[in-house]
Image (cartoon, rainbow, N blue to C red):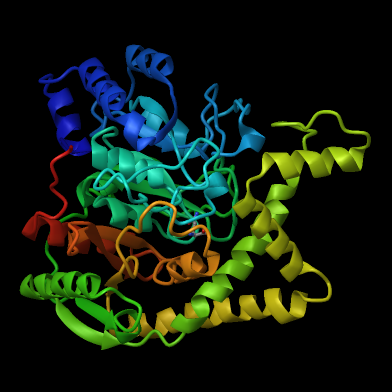
Length: 474
Ligand code: GLN
């Protein structure tokens, strides 16, 4: 069942929330040994939550939700999949978590991910790599790989992930589920452990667009705790799903269908365009001339911000602390050397380098100027269309162990997702087919800032007309 279907069944008293929760834990017990989607389970708290009730009448009341392990949950380990936070129990809930709780959604547990959300494969976790339920020899994508894998495997009804450069959309694409990254500022980041603050955004991963929209209705909104959260009226995202897209102009950027993109991926995404055309939308060519700059721009800005954000993990205030050290400098060095994995250390080094006084102008400042160009480039494209359609990722899920020894190649695979974060736009990934190996392909719909409801509605129209999102759980 989707989250919305389950919510309806619960409100009609056909299913008890306790039964639904028990079924999710049953499925975890059966499958998570092979998938490794969860870092921890919070069954006692979830059951207590159900006993406490709450939110009469809400669409998702009683529907279990699972949460990525970089989003703070009061009293429940929030490790960021890192050794350095392997003993961190937050004393507060992230705003998004507080909101799902007050909507009556019990929290099943915390989902595995790339350490500090840095990665595209969910292989850098201190708790071991996550496996793709479609093929256990392949990665689920990342960094919200645990979230996408859990939903795909039926180990979660729906999930909250985070997306800094594609971490909701790309794993959704690799696992054959639906993921939505909202406009920057639409969901509070309070309690999301920061990776790159100007790019980070919390969003839903679920079975379909309707679920993502229903979850957006719960988690979106202004929050005084997050100065970047926008103080605006949000529409009902679920209520905006009319499925009517006649006259919508869908931009097809040629830059996203060229060299380096798998033929099967291209074909499936272009077929998605044809389906939308059949529903009355108009396909228009658009240009995204900045595409060749987006990966370097992203990796400079993201690592610069990460190097600053991660300076708080020093072995003094909280988290893991190295033992047998002689001096305070040693304490810092040993704690950070032992506490952070390789990829995180690489990024802290890169970020520190691009911010250093000698290289700041050559790298960081130039990246900020390019970010401006990317925002303007999108604005140009949106003058001619209502949404852009492109692949979520150039390929389907790679084999486990293939990506980490070639970081450049892994970074380049983020080409279609990172620009959306740099420009603060909403982006949706919907399943749109399979490749020759039977692996899911995702189509990405990108909207202008604030056009979240529109983007969701286009994805919803596609799902009303197709069945790629309806998958049997294994
Ligand atoms: N793969 C990208 C990175 O490694 C995006 C990660 C994310 O969105 N958190 O930075």
